[in-house]
Length: 125
Figure (cartoon, rainbow, N blue to C red):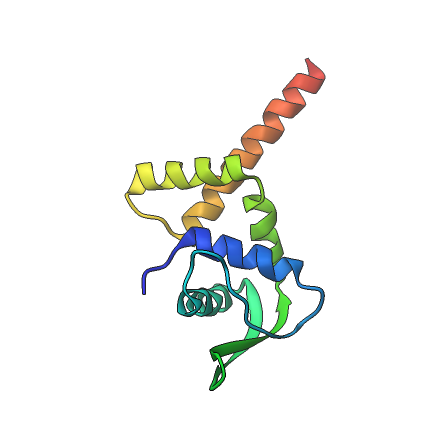
Protein backbone atom coordinates (compact mmCIF):
# COMPACT_ATOMS: atom_id res chain seq x y z
CA UNK A 1 0.00 0.00 0.00
CA UNK A 2 1.28 3.45 -0.88
CA UNK A 3 1.77 6.01 1.87
CA UNK A 4 -0.43 9.10 1.63
CA UNK A 5 0.77 12.08 3.68
CA UNK A 6 -2.60 13.82 3.38
CA UNK A 7 -4.34 10.78 4.87
CA UNK A 8 -1.76 10.61 7.67
CA UNK A 9 -2.46 14.26 8.49
CA UNK A 10 -6.24 13.78 8.37
CA UNK A 11 -5.97 10.70 10.58
CA UNK A 12 -4.01 12.61 13.21
CA UNK A 13 -6.59 15.40 13.20
CA UNK A 14 -9.34 12.80 13.69
CA UNK A 15 -7.42 11.27 16.59
CA UNK A 16 -6.89 14.71 18.13
CA UNK A 17 -10.67 15.27 18.11
CA UNK A 18 -11.46 12.07 20.03
CA UNK A 19 -13.02 12.71 23.44
CA UNK A 20 -10.94 9.99 25.14
CA UNK A 21 -8.66 7.06 24.44
CA UNK A 22 -10.01 3.58 23.84
CA UNK A 23 -10.89 1.17 21.06
CA UNK A 24 -11.38 3.14 17.88
CA UNK A 25 -11.89 2.53 14.29
CA UNK A 26 -13.50 5.16 12.21
CA UNK A 27 -14.01 5.83 8.57
CA UNK A 28 -12.47 8.77 6.79
CA UNK A 29 -14.49 9.86 3.76
CA UNK A 30 -12.81 8.97 0.50
CA UNK A 31 -10.39 6.43 1.99
CA UNK A 32 -10.80 2.66 2.33
CA UNK A 33 -10.79 1.30 5.87
CA UNK A 34 -7.61 -0.71 5.19
CA UNK A 35 -5.79 2.48 4.17
CA UNK A 36 -6.85 4.27 7.37
CA UNK A 37 -5.68 1.33 9.50
CA UNK A 38 -2.38 1.13 7.60
CA UNK A 39 -1.75 4.84 8.12
CA UNK A 40 -2.51 4.47 11.82
CA UNK A 41 0.23 1.81 11.89
CA UNK A 42 2.56 4.22 10.09
CA UNK A 43 1.71 6.95 12.61
CA UNK A 44 2.71 4.59 15.39
CA UNK A 45 5.92 3.62 13.57
CA UNK A 46 6.76 7.34 13.25
CA UNK A 47 6.15 7.96 16.96
CA UNK A 48 3.12 10.17 16.33
CA UNK A 49 0.66 7.97 18.25
CA UNK A 50 0.88 5.32 20.93
CA UNK A 51 -1.55 2.50 20.18
CA UNK A 52 -2.09 -1.25 20.16
CA UNK A 53 -3.32 -2.86 16.95
CA UNK A 54 -5.43 -6.00 16.75
CA UNK A 55 -7.20 -7.90 14.00
CA UNK A 56 -10.92 -8.07 14.59
CA UNK A 57 -13.61 -10.31 13.10
CA UNK A 58 -16.41 -7.75 13.07
CA UNK A 59 -14.66 -4.91 11.21
CA UNK A 60 -11.43 -6.56 10.16
CA UNK A 61 -9.23 -4.00 11.92
CA UNK A 62 -9.13 -2.01 15.11
CA UNK A 63 -6.69 -0.29 17.36
CA UNK A 64 -6.65 0.83 20.96
CA UNK A 65 -5.37 4.36 21.05
CA UNK A 66 -3.36 5.17 24.13
CA UNK A 67 -2.49 8.72 23.18
CA UNK A 68 -1.31 11.19 20.59
CA UNK A 69 2.38 11.60 21.44
CA UNK A 70 4.20 14.88 21.99
CA UNK A 71 5.76 14.38 18.54
CA UNK A 72 2.26 13.85 17.14
CA UNK A 73 1.02 17.09 18.68
CA UNK A 74 4.07 18.97 17.40
CA UNK A 75 3.56 17.65 13.88
CA UNK A 76 -0.13 18.61 13.95
CA UNK A 77 0.64 22.14 15.11
CA UNK A 78 3.15 22.55 12.29
CA UNK A 79 0.76 21.01 9.73
CA UNK A 80 -2.46 22.65 10.98
CA UNK A 81 -2.56 25.52 8.48
CA UNK A 82 -3.62 24.29 5.02
CA UNK A 83 -1.58 26.94 3.20
CA UNK A 84 1.64 25.99 5.01
CA UNK A 85 0.88 22.29 4.53
CA UNK A 86 0.51 22.59 0.75
CA UNK A 87 3.50 24.94 0.43
CA UNK A 88 5.65 22.48 2.39
CA UNK A 89 4.48 19.52 0.30
CA UNK A 90 5.11 21.39 -2.95
CA UNK A 91 8.55 22.57 -1.82
CA UNK A 92 9.67 19.09 -0.79
CA UNK A 93 8.33 17.40 -3.91
CA UNK A 94 9.80 20.06 -6.20
CA UNK A 95 13.21 19.88 -4.54
CA UNK A 96 13.49 16.12 -4.14
CA UNK A 97 10.87 14.42 -6.29
CA UNK A 98 9.62 12.54 -3.24
CA UNK A 99 7.81 13.19 0.01
CA UNK A 100 8.92 11.99 3.43
CA UNK A 101 7.68 12.80 6.90
CA UNK A 102 11.08 14.10 7.98
CA UNK A 103 11.38 16.36 4.93
CA UNK A 104 7.86 17.69 5.56
CA UNK A 105 8.79 18.48 9.15
CA UNK A 106 11.84 20.44 7.97
CA UNK A 107 9.87 22.32 5.32
CA UNK A 108 7.07 23.15 7.75
CA UNK A 109 9.62 24.38 10.28
CA UNK A 110 11.34 26.60 7.70
CA UNK A 111 8.01 28.07 6.60
CA UNK A 112 6.95 28.68 10.20
CA UNK A 113 10.26 30.39 10.97
CA UNK A 114 9.90 32.59 7.87
CA UNK A 115 6.40 33.54 9.03
CA UNK A 116 7.67 34.39 12.50
CA UNK A 117 10.50 36.52 11.09
CA UNK A 118 8.07 38.39 8.80
CA UNK A 119 5.64 38.97 11.66
CA UNK A 120 8.41 40.22 13.94
CA UNK A 121 9.79 42.53 11.25
CA UNK A 122 6.31 43.99 10.67
CA UNK A 123 5.89 44.66 14.40
CA UNK A 124 9.29 46.24 14.79
CA UNK A 125 9.45 48.25 11.68
